[in-house]
View 1 (tube, rainbow, N blue to C red):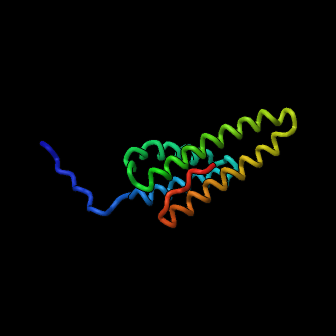
View 2: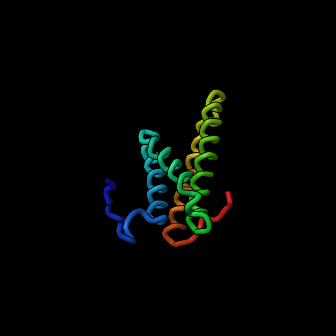
View 3: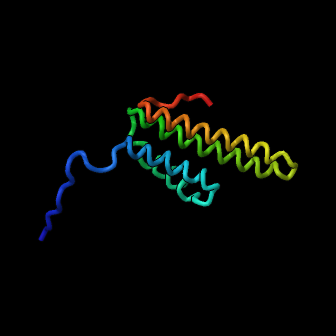
Length: 122
């Protein structure tokens, strides 16, 4: 009593390029909403981790690594900035960290639109 399920048509579904755009979009949504949609950023990172192995050897692997590194370094700097608000310099370092994260997301997303991998500079 096996039931035959229809096979997906070739060329349909979410390609790695579309998935990478989705990851950048979710990450940006989390930033633009000032954390209100923080779950979008978490979803972007989870997707990047889940699909990183499928993208090995492609230009998209560099984008997934780029987003993951941006998230973890940004989180570190935001936490340190939060602690530094106790000595009144955390607002400045937090703003610098925010500008850095926005820069990295913009640079990576623009590289994706151009079909290139983001550079590995900090």
